[in-house]
Image: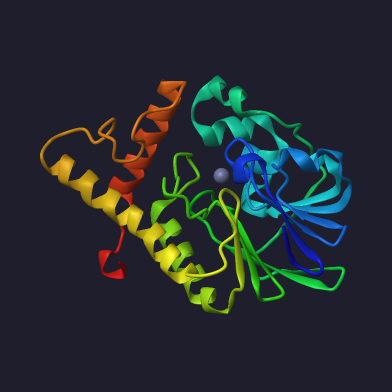
Length: 261
Ligand SMILES: [Zn+2]
């Protein structure tokens, strides 16, 4: 899908349904995320990764050089760090569908790249991962990464996730949203209108979960397995139950400021 002369969305299968993702191609030289299977035959100079998860970095090897936020770099370079952040021991091997490589450079919040005349600004949006970043292209097109606006809602089941950072990151994006023509989530369809509302609804999912989790805890019940996050655990169930447990714990330890909602 062409968004403007030099910027194209490459949808992963079924609009980037996991384990694929949507990518953005700038001219012929830069790709943002690499989890769409169709990019396999391409060759680009540069890949910018939104974060370290396997569905965003799968085809990184098609690039001469890869950039990622410094807080996420270790997890794309070493299996040990990848496994540590998942917190599920050797089960993490199930998610390795890519080759670890050490030719990975880093960027930081506010850094600006230029590819074939297109400016790409790095927006650090932690929460989903410590180094998760969105990218603003020419001030008009926003790559959202896994601030993905899906009905499932925000995901924060790894050890480097942070639910209150996630809320702050969504609010950071809300402030920029009025000037954005297109927002490209890593999963789902391109958004061309109503971005502020969609971000607010996405944030609302966090606070609704928060309310339900704290109500159950107050009644002495365990919130895990009650359908608050996963309606049903996908297979392998023990892994997704673990992720839900981590997400619930993150609610119970975070200082979410409800006046923000
Ligand atoms: Zn992710």
